[in-house]
Image (cartoon, rainbow, N blue to C red; front, side, top):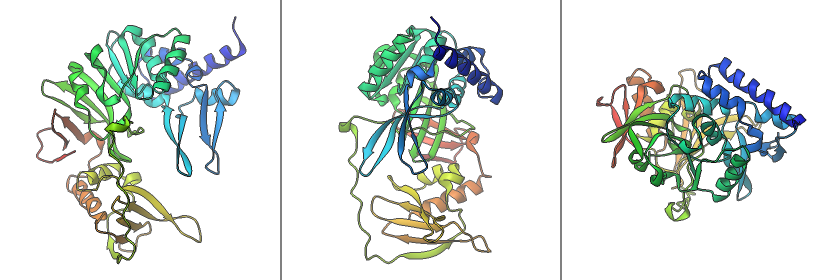
Length: 387
């Protein structure tokens, strides 16, 4: 028996597939068919949105408004965790346009075996199962509740791929080798276990991100002794891969810099590369930026508009760069604490200028069992930096 809901979601799913094709996100007819056939609202029956005050509100996706969201190129937040006085997202259903771009970038063929790292809601897994069949699709997530929920919802759609609860960095060795690995979480370095589980010539697509906003998707191919490839032209970012508690480094207590004298000078480096020039921001991590630095903004107390970009390190060091430049394009910089946080950004910006302002396609990555490094234009280029 066909219900009103069945009719509502099917035309919306077809519309989404048509829209993704029109936008250029989707060119393969097989993936277009999968997008039109997979009921995303079944896999994401509930989602969370922030209202104008920043408060999280829950909505269901079986209503008209909810269905519009489910079948739009929108990331749906599906899991929240309490972080002191606020809640932050810990799992989501990735934007369909990004997922299909990733699937097309991986050049998946009909007989390929694919491992999806980060099961989440199961939407990516469902697209893969529709295209490849259950026996060629494997998916893992560290969260057992997410895995079991996805298993149940996928089964209700007639899909029974292999799902397991694992730390994503470990892969799923007992079912290897895989022709392709797709990760919908970010990693500071590519796990070598993934290379060991790929077929010769196989490929992995993963967001390599040593710090917030500092990185991009990298398409890496398996060679006998390494993974190697380039970053994608369009920028994308995912939540950081979660690990079991015993595999995590305890956070470093933030030291106090109370009583230390601020250091003031000017800089010609633009103040917020993490938003305005993410290539420079990635290079800054490889030019000595300390681990665990957070970014932010200082608001003008009168206008409540952003007045300065800020960096804060675990050792308590800070940097604040005015967003307003002087007539000679210089920005006021104030630093406190033992670490000069803006120096790596300035060095990275200078490197970027010296190499003709490269964008993502000129940057590549090589990963071996023991070392990983970023290179420019060609793997043998002497311009490279260790991750």
